[in-house]
Length: 472
Image (tube, rainbow, N blue to C red):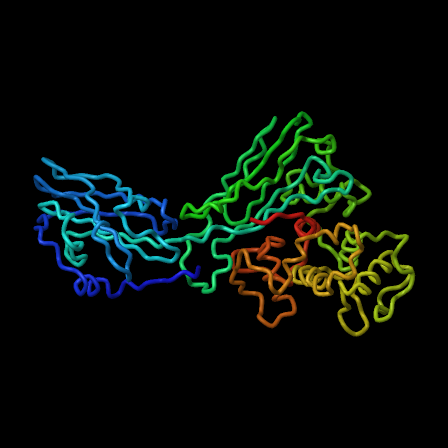
């Protein structure tokens, strides 16, 4: 249901025009506060807590809470007596407004704007026909939008190794997910509370590392110990900041017994321990999709050439040196790619598949560095070509993350990049890849599309592209 925003500019006029003013006498000198959440959930079973404080009260004093939907009709039964304080000049407490109580006639609907009024009066005014005038000094207001839109998102798990369905390739991997509370809203300015919590749960013979800071992108990197055995479960039950659950959770990353291949150590390198992309590098290396150097290192912070990128992408597409072209296909005869070059067949295949293009003037520029803007454009090309050139059964053909580049795909997260021009060839792919968590920015406002991509960054990007998925 589309959300609706009601203005509060005519609040006093609205009350005066529609309702009579309470006849009870206000308490002279009384001061107070009323604090509640900016958003509350929708539905008849919803409750919302408001904290109140009061000073300067006389004996006796009635503290009264009123609630109503702004812009709608007011129900007399929505008047609720919070407490009566006798013989004291101060007071505080929490008032829980329960919409499931039959006396509270209206229930919060998605997009509603509710106002709550705290009143200090000499007598119990709950029986009057309307709340006291909010413009009067002894009234204290709080308001809350109703967010009835639950989080929606994707749940990604490591790609299986094609030898045991559902099992990971080795003991080091990353679970990740994305969630949005504004998913599918027709009007971007509609009020919504935003991400709340992943509510992660684990059950098994070991405790995985914590997921870290909780926001709309979950990145949970895990290494299974050799002693892990038996049933192992890890799940999330995403919740928005208003308390809305999807209603279908929990969603499982894993719910089954640990298998032997899951506790086998991943391929390792001498220079990736503790690196931010360690789990991506080791996992993909175990699948045979990336490799290191002769000295046992991987060089996670080294840059990547265009020829190396063509090679890694076509390996993920199921090619090896025995199945590559031995001469340039039509339209791929680059003057700077000779048949004797180690990368020739890989470049020719990536060109023939429509994944990578030349740079103009008959050149491919194989030894130039691959930029961050170029890599997302390459994956966009793979999708835009209709996936027709992906080999059946290859890791790339099972890469659901490529759907991120569909024009109709939803955006799970957005950013206001200051360095991505609207007309740039990489503009749309950057927005789509970031939206689905495939790539990150270099800061909150920059993507750095012309910056060279590192080998570690490429491993993470490829890992995310190849991840299997579930939706919620």
